[in-house]
Length: 428
Image 1 (cartoon, helix red, strand yellow):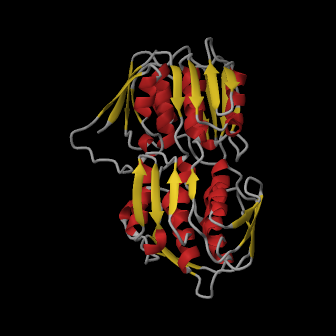
Image 2: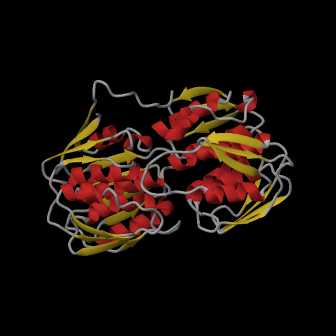
């Protein structure tokens, strides 16, 4: 079993370049299905989830050319099916974006139920509600989601019962070629929602209000090709910011949009770290003990749930008692792994109480999901002794070259590969 071996206690310093946002890349890759001409996508992160999405795109019949490690050119004109058949679709959450994209192109879609990290129940009822409102008839059988709009797709007013990023973006994908006006209320406002809308608008769509809680989409008949660069990854950037604070480091995080990081910056400053923002950089300096703070995850622009495990690892050795509330997802399963390292954390449903300890100690732990795995790495970097993080395939779903980047900052970490491990699906 592949694992990371970390010798903790090394102060991180230097510069790290942030990759493109995985959570923007996945829907944008699916969105190329809607175009009537080739599209070039730049600044793609070289992570396994992106590799799976590109593979699925090719299985649909699209021509995909790799121009370099982070750039592809997609010709979707050769796509001739509305059905995703490859079982790899069941390994990631983002495969469900092909439902909206294929439905928008063909008026029908057949896609396997999505997979991804198992950190709680993540229903797709809001997706299905939106498809139905736009004219789709939905059914599920033997692990397949089938949506057919036999009378065509028509604009509608759709109110999301909960703020959901995935359903907001799937609705955009479906509505962009539907007849008339679609209004999404209580829409998600995350940067990757805005990025998807900006990409589609570059192709000729008419999407307004992305980044607010009301999005208006005037359907168009055709979408042209274009070149587009993915935004920087907010969560990867936040993870390196937390890692810098955890090791008492001095790290400049480059290729970022600082305003996307405001909620993370605010909490690190509350804990005692010094943050310096540039045009596309954030520098984190921390040379003293950290203070407690309380964290409540919220939809953007609040503190992101995808940063909750990382900040919890940091609070494990901050002075005082911290309280973390995460009512978005059930993400506290990883806490037992931190306890192996000496953390004192109690969990009551969607709340964790963290009693800061003087230090964490290296141990054998598992990456239970993508973000929890990042938390284990952060804890290992700050701990005394040796930490071994198993199941690193979860981490590599969303963090490009994490070992290489951490080594570049002065960490003592390496990847130990099992002889019989299956290769990860990467780009190129």
